[in-house]
Length: 428
Image (cartoon, rainbow, N blue to C red):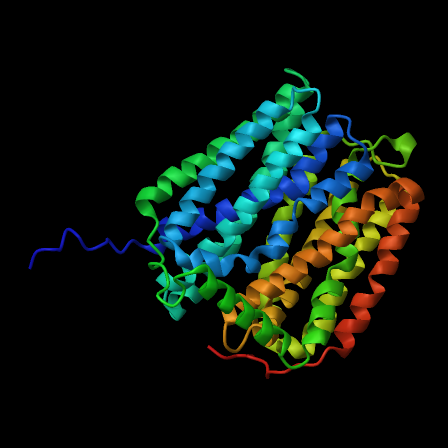
């Protein structure tokens, strides 16, 4: 029997799962972390950097609000490809804006477009994954998801930051960062063109969402059922407070590493930050995530959740110690950051699994998981917006004391948070 030429080819997921999730990670990391170092190199104050690079992350919090509208048009593949190309073009516009007198205003505006495009890409990309793969395939390729999302983190916050540090010594600061933004643009456009041929459709537009009224009705139902869940107030508090201290620290740590010793920083070069903070740190995050998953599967989430919270939050003490003693040995600084990132990865899986097992189950589980992750991003974004002003006011040493104080609510809410559903321990 001859194959039907009109029937779509069923491609092995290994051809598209890694590239989709790499494309999810790159813009998020570039905006939330790499842009912090770029703007610092270009002379923008810490307060403005922390506020605006936190604010532009808002679309990743609000993405559930427009997810029903994506069901009205075309296929999920259509949105994945379009957003990858839009993101790539927008990175190119960021690069072209950097030599301009008001570059900060223009680049933040273009980054806002990247954020909206990236958040929309996440909705569509997850939709393709959930639609095209069976339950067993989803479990099989979940490791590839995390690995390539974090590979984007290693490349962007590690290799590209290192390259920026090398280039600025030879071609100049502005030209160096234009090159980095240009590389991000090229990567995203190439992935988009690749997916035109390789990515499966993810299904056609939904039959039950034909009009704006239908989409709004679905959105209303999703929101209402989410806030009617048992213990939902507890869960919202838990999701926000688990990463509360991280929200303060994440924007300031790279600025602290780069700041002169006379200003209370460690005086590292950008390429050194890229090497230890972006590469070894991200590698430690991946190792911690893998081990954290085995730890949970062996003991069960309910039994180990508080210890995961401790692993996530206690290592922030390394930044307080670095600010106090201001060591000059790169190996010592690197070891401290690797320790913090390992704990970050080890503890972070607890939050993600809690949202999957306790918040998402029930009708509209995919949308409710999106709501949970959106609330999580909001919990990081708000303290991130304040972090620059606080660090300027308190100085790095006292600021990291504040970060340690900010961990206390996470310990309390984790200790008392109730479980609605039993553990999925040892279930295959």
